[in-house]
Amino acid sequence: MYRCPICGFRTIRLFALKQHARHTHVLNQCPVCKKEYLNIYQHFYVHAYNDSQHLVLCYLFTTNKLRSFAKRKVKELLKVDGGIPWT
Figure 1 (cartoon, helix red, strand yellow):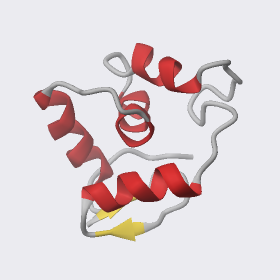
Figure 2 (cartoon, one colour; figure 1 turned 135 degrees about the horizontal axis):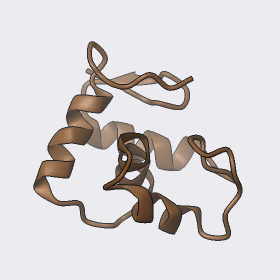
Figure 3 (spheres, helix red, strand yellow; figure 1 turned 180 degrees about the horizontal axis):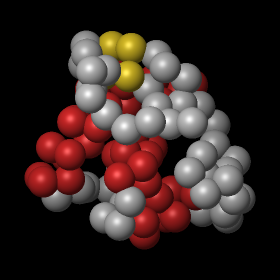
């Protein structure tokens, strides 16, 4: 089971979580940095491989292809029992 890092929505499919994030959440600022950006999606991609929270947001909100090791890490981070704290 996977959990949305923004609102806590839970689903058994990762693709369903990706659709939920894109259709439900409109991001005006980065939830990690708390700053506004002209192109928030580019910001996620630039920081994706340096920070796990940005990596998760990059996967959920952009159409950029991530490397296979990054996809595995995203799956681990979004699992309900594991994952990263989003406060």
